[in-house]
Image (tube, rainbow, N blue to C red; front, side, top):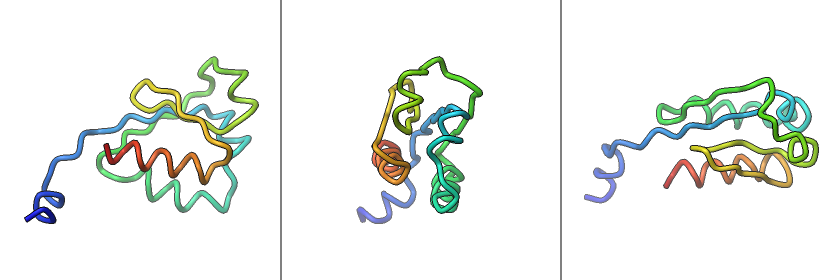
Length: 89
């Protein structure tokens, strides 16, 4: 029964915003496939902005803004893992 509920439950849309400059700096080609799979899910709304005016953070670490919350990580793999956890909530 739980599996059926999980399969047919409506997932709340997750809005993820990226800074283009941050992606250019930290996202590597070997991560493209995993990011593409995640960001093309039905419940994920993704936008990329040229700049999000978070210049200090942008230079130091990969980040995204998820439903208005700033999420940073040490590397793109860790960021993707955090985004996946956030999308499951």
